[in-house]
Length: 461
Image (cartoon, rainbow, N blue to C red):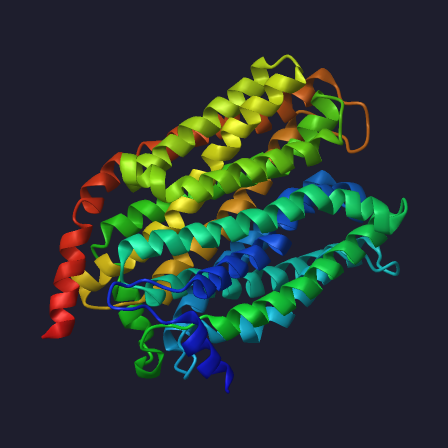
């Protein structure tokens, strides 16, 4: 039996009600598990790796992260167009899990590997090259994960279920990544953090290759045999008057700035403000568990407060979590509770846009008669993640440098204030910016059922 036949029989392509099988949902779980298992190491530890392990200054690191992220973000619409142009018996998005598994793992391993022969200039060139390649490949993986969702089912409730599986998988991958990376670095490196990071990421990479192959084998897109390439100009036309997409993309960009700042500065806050570097791994673990719970309950929360309301609720909870950290006075119990609240909120903030992007694909088809799932979801996910993460990594370096941060040294009062500003107050401001536009999104969410009925009527005629 061929892999495609196995996928057809095991994943049970969506039935008349748009439902999918448990194996299909579990395979979708694995896609984001793999993406976050590796990519969250960048979000959580790359800034620290470059400054305290690889040996770059905080100023050089900040400029490197910003410029490479902005340059790297340009590939998102390109990847979207590539996916829209993909025409194979496997579908548009699914084959990229097979084709990018090995490049993804290898490029991430190289990013966290430190060749001993590099000069200072050589380190900068190497860091730019490896980080850029890893980001480009990750964009392809992320685009495939997000763009396949509208083609797995046309049922909006089923999409929320699939998105819950996806985000749960991402949360488990993030939990392993953020909670066990530093302990594994210490265990495998035996005091040599450069060796420890290389071995840890290499081990994770092998797991990713195996699991992405499995996901490819057991996912199946609807009507894959009938897909045709979409011209680039038609993909771009899908944006015209697609206001829910425009709102969602703008908000998602700010979300990833906020998430990147939270993840990138927590280790500095723990190490220098709280005086306990090891606490960062504990908080990352709490964050991921709370986020996983949020992902599991995401569909339920959205059912009660609507999708736009769930996103607003997430932003409010993240703001509460950060302000609570500032008011904790170093009390561990309070820190754990407020960080869990913020972690649940981040789960909602992070997870909701991915499911909602599938709905904006429907809206784009409704107003423009173009179903450009690859292009719209690539910009809405990969570009926002990468550009937002780049800005979220750059902003703290500017602030910390301004207030006199020096790596691996006793920090001055000004430097400690700069770290607190990055970790506590800037994320709160970003949460306000995230919440407000979602009130405008509500009017479009109310039209979703009517739009689906209209699209089905068009397809039937």
